[in-house]
Length: 535
Image 1 (tube, rainbow, N blue to C red):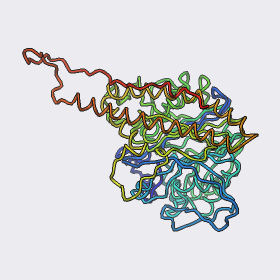
Image 2: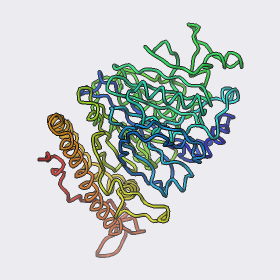
Image 3: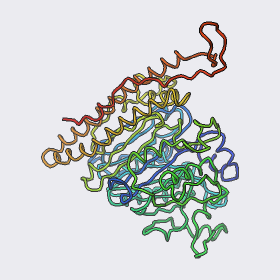
Image 4: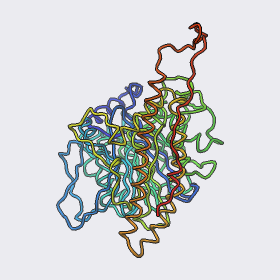
């Protein structure tokens, strides 16, 4: 979820023991997955994150252009925009998935770039909100006007040529301004990925993630010992502060246990913890396939049972605990916070190719609005623009206008809302169609990138135009199909509308006692168009 102006107050309240807030509504609700290149099916690195928040908070996709030799520019640090950080005279081109203007106005926040990939192949996604304990936050309180997740992505992406540089930029900003939230960020490039836990106003730990492991977690910290990692960067007082204030907790090896020191079991909630469990069980069922246990600690890193594909990651991000006693769709339960939630503002999957030129190395697979009945479309970091449907920005004066005709976000938000009214009737056919469409796009995208790489040596502009045209055409086609699907859902919802839910004899009118069961809606569209390669 995106950090808001009221984050400071809420976080202090949670740390004071009001964790029941989590049950009140899906405010802090993101989930992240990391797949190292050595355990992915095609050798790419994959980082996925949902950006979840209750309400109608539309998002879009953008490309921010490279700027050269323009000193004196600034970017906001805090949500109010009253604190500004000067950025370099040279800033890199990068893609983002920010809020639209009317969402920013509702939230009194900055745009929240959500997921960025720049021309150097550097990616950042922030944040998965997490929870520190009262002792840690009393010792080092959050800074109300400190760096927020709504501003951090832009500040890092615009000026970082490597992942390491991106991490250093992020941590320097925290050192300088403090943090206004308890967050988790991930920064990566073709060579390495870094995972950062931000515990308090000024305390953090950043670690280099191994290439042969996976991670999956909800809104909670799971990192214990820095000795488990080959490289790390920490705040100056990460170890001394808890020792001096009396809240340090150590393991049997005598090393500071970061999880127990800064968070701990008392901050655990099934609202977050069950999503961590489900990510583990889906990717490593041989180890974590048993039933959920709120008392069990699920580690940050683990080895998946099999090589993980992009499609596997999308399935995890759509997971609604199917086949378990916790599935809201199969059991009717209303107390489950699933990974694939209908409260997602956007869900993004960053796929990093290790062998391509950096400016062509990252594809952001983006689902605007919930991905449950939505579709992931590609945006290469080499693209120079996005389609009108995915890039359109609804202005503040249109706040309250639910416009599925001109904005892709609204169409997918409503498709999922309607699809979950009766998942088998209105949702399952939609999911199946988008699955076929995604298969075509996922098969073609590597070939499109290879062709662009061949074009790059002779004509970089032609190569960029080629990739941009392909991605934009898919986005446009997806939006047109989405509007057809939405019309079909609405048509059949109205056709089937009837407060009488029991079948009756058409000749006598007598009720049979049998519940009316509707057939799944027809989707009269062909997914073959998504298998076509561009000329």
